[in-house]
Structure formats: structure tokens, C-alpha cells
Length: 342
Image 1 (spheres, rainbow, N blue to C red):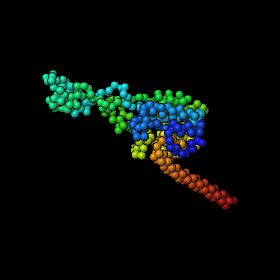
Image 2: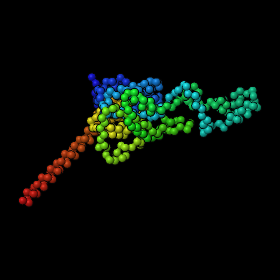
Image 3: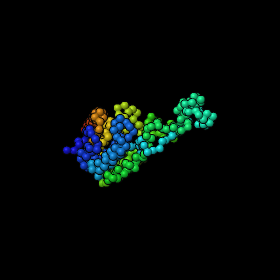
Image 4: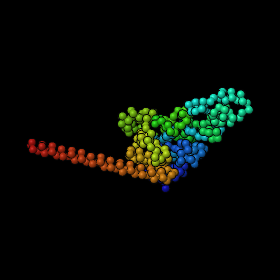
């Protein structure tokens, strides 16, 4: 028995993906845990995270239709603790509240060679920590005893996982989002840039791919369908889930890469954004989510969208009936005028 469409299935994607009907998915759109220490991913070590990503990508080959696509949204830089990395020391002048310099301390040590750092601190009117930092360079980001944070590019890892699975990188879009100042505290302590863009890696399963430009309007093709960079505002409030992507991101991918009634999968469903976009665009959806509270949240959000979509469709149907009735009345009136003329 295969997993049912238009349902959120609770469980581990590494187990449930194998239960999806082979060659049934038109598009899989998802964003994996970013290994940033958020609550829902704290159980993953870096090795676990890499294994998760590789296995989930590998399991997609069997379930995608030939010629179909897998779209993975992920920041290209991953940060994780690495015991092997040398300690990163930063002399951040703007954050120094004590004007004592290393040279002043060395001069004091020369005058008072028997003074320890406690006595030097009293002499110079500063703390013992200031003496230690100026003399020994102990201005270490992240603290003296924590492993240093190392950055690693994710794109190559994802591409290799796709190749190993038999999927080929087809395209890459850049999502320019709001600058993530809160998540980039290091930008004030280093020369690193603030986080303000992510990638969407699009993989292709070998097979015949239907290219139908009529899926988009002329304006949509010009504004984003044929453009590599997508400017989409970030979600303004992650109050019910820690890491939501904006609705417009999966909506564009769904509209660009699938036909109406196609099946769209998200194996890290979270708050249900991909399912909501699929419903809005007239596609079926299937979700996998590990945590029960997010299954409930996703179901609620999708059900709300389905109700609104049904009401909107009913309104359109009524408008069509009214227009048809008006045409019939006009036609009848015209026929009556002809009969009177005769």
C-alpha cells in the first residue's frame, strides 16, 4: 500500500519516501534542516545531517516521474562546530571599552617585572581579562572552550548526492531574501557578509520533459520565469514554525515545472507552505513531516486554503453562469426584435 496523495504523513522522510508509488511525483519541492541548531534539528550531528541529505535525495529517483524535477531550497553556506579548526581571533576595535593597549602593558611589565596579571590590572585600572586578552590574543569568537565554527559550501555536496542518485543538476535559481540580521551576529565581529540570499537547486530525472511556456503569462515569463534571480520577501513572522519559506517560492516552482493536477511532494513539510501553494495552483500535494505539531499545523493551513479556493471557484462559476444567462437573454431579445420587424 502506497502513501495517499493530498495527505500529510507523519514520520521520517528516510523511511516514508520508500512508501510512495514509483514514478508518481511530478515535482518535489523542499527545504532541508539547515543544521543551525534549531529545536527541530538539535538531534542531528553534522555527519547525521549529511547522511540525511544524501539518503533523501537518493530515494527521490524511484518516485519521480521520468522527466520530472526535484527542487531543493538551501542556503549555500553551512556553519557547524569543528574541533580541528584553529581558533579564530579578532581584534574588534569598535567593541573595546578599555583603552589600554598591549604596548602599555608591556611597558608596565618592564618596569615591574615581578608583577603578576592581577597586580598589573590594579596598576593600569583594568580587568585581569583585559591583561590576558591584550598579552595573549585571547579574543576568541565563540569563547575559549567551545569548538570554532567553520563554514562549508553546501552546493557541491547536494550536486554530488544528486549525481549518485542518478539525478542531474538542471538549473539553479537565486532567492534574494531580506537580510537576516538577527541570524548573522558575526557580521559585526568580522568582515563576513550578512545572510541575504539562498539557492534553489533543480535536479532532473532522465526522461521526456514537457516544455509548456503557456503555463505562465507573458509578464510572468519576463519577470521571473526566465530570470535566474528571484527577489522575494522573507516570511515576516516565524511565530508558529522556526523556519518558513515564503509562499511565492514554491508557488513559482510549481507553476513553472508542473501541469495542473500534477502531484507535488514536500518531504520536510513543516507548516505546509508547499501544500498551500499546490492547492492554490490546482495541483495535488503530498507531505511528510517528522513532528506531530507541525503535521497538525500544515493540515490546518492547507484546509483553510482549500476552503478559500472552493469559495473562489464557486464565485467564478456563478459569474460564468450569470454571463451565460445574460447572453441568452440578449440573444432572445435580439430574436424577438427580428420577429417584430418581420
